Length: 109
Image 1 (cartoon, rainbow, N blue to C red):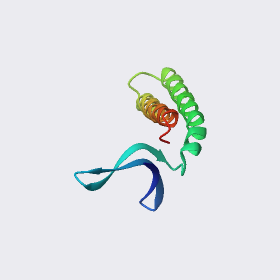
Image 2 (tube, helix red, strand yellow; image 1 turned 90 degrees about the vertical axis):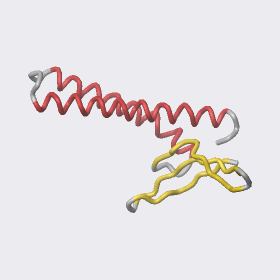
Image 3 (tube, rainbow, N blue to C red; image 1 turned 45 degrees about the vertical axis):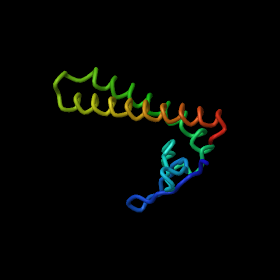
Image 4 (cartoon, helix red, strand yellow; image 1 turned 180 degrees about the vertical axis):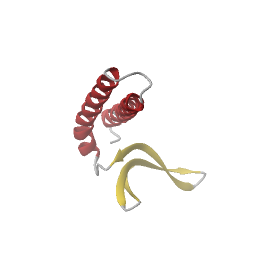
């Protein structure tokens, strides 16, 4: 059985799609997908594609900025680092989106 669990971290609420099951007679929960600030799977499915596009655009802009700066310059390194971080966040979010769609298709979410 899957349901959304809410966690509070440093005063902010985050949500996880979890599965409840028994292991050796004890109840256990396994996180299927981290939904972040989205309280429902539907909200995450709606928002994540836009967020992925935003992160990809940010990475592209930062790479363009880095290309126009002298190599080795601190500003160039910073722009390159921001681009890389945006790409990593977009890739992670894309993985979550694909997993949530797979779970939805399988009737879990």
